[in-house]
Image 1 (tube, rainbow, N blue to C red):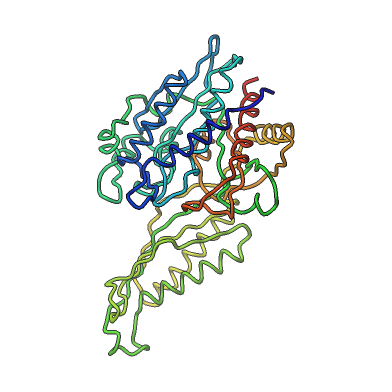
Image 2 (image 1 turned 90 degrees about the vertical axis):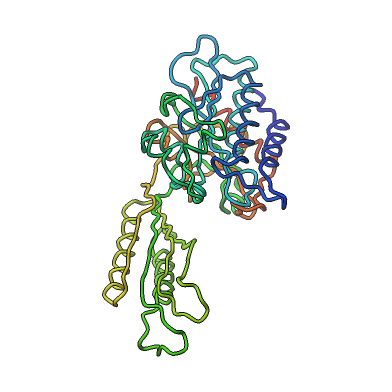
Length: 405
């Protein structure tokens, strides 16, 4: 076991990248394909070049830094995550995993000669804020979507991803999937409260929840708020409210289930008009595929009940990913590495989606979690203690060495 990664350099890089893409109010926002995204990519690419890595960019904009030691052969061990953010983000989500991967390679460059190459990757549009679906770069790399289809996706502002990648200089020529991982590791903040609450240093992630995203539209009848008797209303807002309560109750009585309505809009949106339409998103998750399907079926039945009540209802699927079980041999290697570093570790399920779930389609993969203070993420208050960040990166290093042995 070598001493470890350069912790001070890792923390300094996290802070410098975290300062890149802030607006006049100090909010950190690096959406895929924006000028802020370009600034973050430029910073990362500079660090990769400075480490002596070969930098490749594929057609979906994924950035790879590849170390090919003398005599190394075969597909690379890949370590990565993403550097795009949500709106008004914290500085650790995704970025920590990419920069820790670079730190691992730099540590190995001192006196080690692994038998196969190593690669650190920053995937495009993991967050999915501007372009849907999320985890897009890793999905395309794993063959789950054609690159032409992905590049044609229009963002929330109507501009295609392909046009924006070209504009910011990150429309590469490498075919996605040309760099195929021998195995994949992803280090991430937990984004939840479990590790901190239990006083555990690390999570060895063995499963990842399935995700079902839908957009639902309920159409009733818009009418005057004062002159229309309650018994004569077809209020789309009330119908939507009932469905929101139903989804919450359904998730609470379904083992492992969660449900969230993150967006809701009434039309015409006037204080004195009964809503004629309600549009909202539904995010349902479960680590068990059968239970997730049961949640989806229950929602479909509830929508059918609304149709029988006279509402016009449509439901559009936005994204659907089955639960993932990560490679058991890598999960075990993470636990062993934690034990050797005298760090407590527990096996756990990820409640959030990650690029690792896409890469797991084509290679053995697993994740390492470090605690998030208060379980807060996607928020400027997102925080993990520097000592915990360094400890996680050292376990990543030791796990990588095992996979290269």
